[in-house]
Length: 219
Image 1 (cartoon, helix red, strand yellow):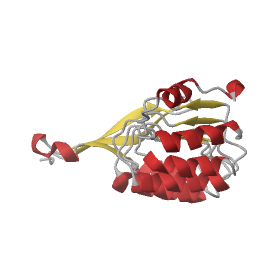
Image 2 (cartoon, rainbow, N blue to C red):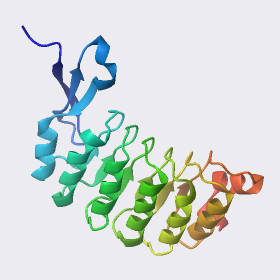
Image 3 (cartoon, rainbow, N blue to C red):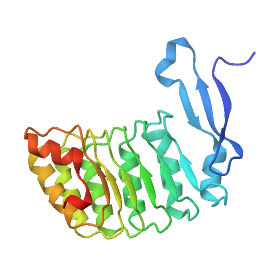
Image 4 (cartoon, rainbow, N blue to C red):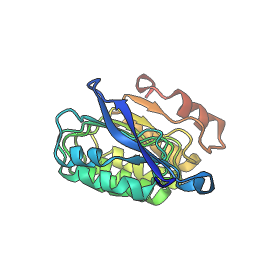
């Protein structure tokens, strides 16, 4: 008899429109709900390591992956040169995102990263600021709904050293007034053309308004 544990392949379209079994649903019974969920299939790791030409978008969005499941995929990106877009939102990553920031410091392929709604804390957010200070490829970065907080000051400093980023999202990131003002000032002298920063923790009405309505033409 088969175990109640089951892995079921999920066929999902990639950027090229072809289906591929990159995820498996692991079911461990009604009494193990916390361990039941999506797991990356071995084929995904294989394609990342081998620079599969059809894998240009790494899409983990909404899979509920934690650090343990995500770290092998992140580390495989260190030698990968075909992936150009990372859609990693709506997961439970923190350490894995810190590792990713280190890898992307020297990556010359990835231009777009979405890590919204993860478990990123201020320490890992500071790693992303360090990334922006050195990366010359990334043009689109979504950090929204992570606990960036005071690390927004580090982001502000990094923007002064970055010339390639064009879109930045930090909505609902626990950013308070002092850090928000520094970030807004840095944006004015950066190459960023589109910014989203609503729903943070600013007490000053004027600062909240500037975060919501920021536009390059107003600077």
